[in-house]
Image (tube, rainbow, N blue to C red; front, side, top):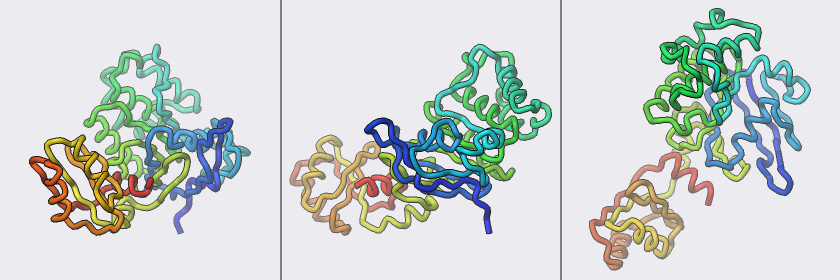
Length: 303
């Protein structure tokens, strides 16, 4: 039986009248890469701050490797690595000084655990004398991850680590996470990017402080059974409006230059839809049935 590294049971947190999260429940297995997927304001950061013992939940409980986040917070802080969403290292210290400082805080050295961070750190080592505040977004991200790993944590918690960095750096970062997972480290990562969901072992889709679904990315996609069509015309703005006026309309969301459309019956007659849009004088019309992706599933859950 696989050991659970993280368990959250009925976690709730409010700020005044605002409910940040409500009755959050999930489990993360040892050496699993688990993703919290949702837009800004969904409650991802609040969950991570509770798990890292930075704030207290109003109700519920959470454990990391069997340690309670309230009673055992000192022990927990020694066994986790945390990378907050906002770059929070010392900007006036150099790359090398930041890494050395965090190693010292945890009673270790760069040399002792260098094997764990070398694949990441060697990319920024040529800039080790540069101040952290002068690094690019991707380099800051690699330094922050190195600092979170230097004490050899059992659980790594990363809050929107790829927000604001370029596509190449995003890919490199996820490649690093896959390598870390093979070393037995449990990884929790949050992201607003739906395409990153497929890179996780399992994901929790979260919106407005509530988890809508937890499963593997493939299982979530497979659970989508209704017809889904991609529609394109010369006027996307008017296309969305006309699709939302279509009889039996359920949803119409833009995806680049195309619009993903569903109806309430779940079965779409493409010929009828095409004739309707031609009557609305749409030009360069293209309609085709497509397979749902994670974002389609998320939008369906929201409705």
